[in-house]
Length: 390
Image (cartoon, rainbow, N blue to C red; front, side, top):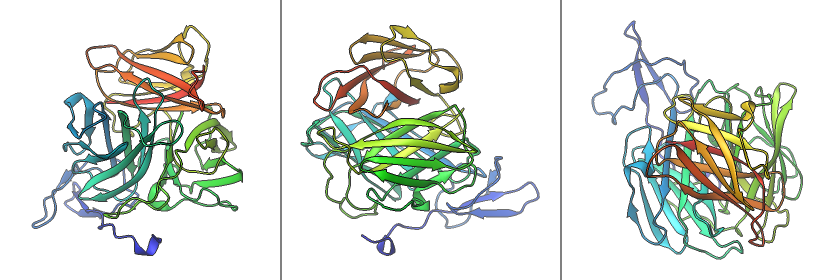
C-alpha cells in the first residue's frame, strides 16, 4: 500500500490550559514544552489523556499462554493510559496485541520470544484505530509458523528530552542513504535519523546529536512485506528475519549504530527493522515507573556487574549478570518488581539470536533468564542488550 492510501484516523488532540488560562492544542507532530498542566474538558471531544506538554505513550505485555487467546494478568500488562491490554491468537504463531486506549499514529514496537525452545518472534504490523494494535508473528528457527509465548514493548514520543531515539528502517534494500518515515522516527535532539545500507544485511543508523559512549540499543526485525496500516490485513510474511546490533558509539556529535540482519540460515540478508536508543532513561521514556537496561558484554564471565556506562535502573538498585551454562544467563534486577516485559537483542554481528526464557512473577528481586542460539539451534555464549519495564 502506498503512503498516499494509508487510512489512519487523525491523532486525537490534547488540550491544555496554562496558568494564564490560555489553551494550547497539540497534534502528534508538535514539539511541546516539558511541564505538566491541567487538562480542560472540551464538550463533545474524545476523552482527554493525561495532560503533558510532551507525550510519551508506552505500553507492554507479556503473553505466557502460547496456544489460545487469553486475559493477561495484572503483572503481565501495562500502558500509560491505564487501558486493558489483550492478546488474541488467530492461527499458529499469529497474535494480535491490543493496547487499550492507546491509539496513536507512529511509534515503534519491539518483541522478544519468551521460552527455552529458541523460537523467533517478530513484528508483522502495527496500527491505530482507537486502540493500538500490533501484529506479532512467531516461527521456528527455519521460518515455519510456531506458537510461542512472547514479551512486547511499545513507545511513541513527540518531544521527550531524552536522550532518546527510535525509528522504523522501512527500506531494506535501499541503495541510497535515506531518512525513515518521520511518522515512525524520533530523535530527542531534533535531528533527522538516517540509514546507510553498504551491503546485504548491513545497516548503519545515524542518530543526530546523541553521540556518546553510553546507553542501550534494542532492535527487532519487521517481518511484514508491506507498510504499517489501519484496518487492512498484514502484508505477506517475510522469511523469519533476525536482526541484532553489531556496535554503537559516537561519530562526532552523532550516535552511529551498526545493525546486522540475517535469514533463517544465518546468511546476511536485507530486512526491515525497528530500533530504539535510550540513555539514562527507560523504555517508557522520561516518564518512568520501573525501568532498566544493560549491555551484557562479557559472554563467558561467571558473574559480573555490567559497565556503569551501559546500565541503568530506576528507581535504583544493582544489576548483575550470571552465566548458568553455554548460552544461558540470569539477569538480576534488584529494584524491579515481579512481572513486566523485556526486550533482548543479540550483540556482536554473529549469526546468533537471543531471547528471554523467563521473567519472574512470584517475588523479588526480578530475575530474567536469557537464552542465546546459533541459527542451527545450538546454544552459544553471546553478548546481548536487555531493556526492562514494568
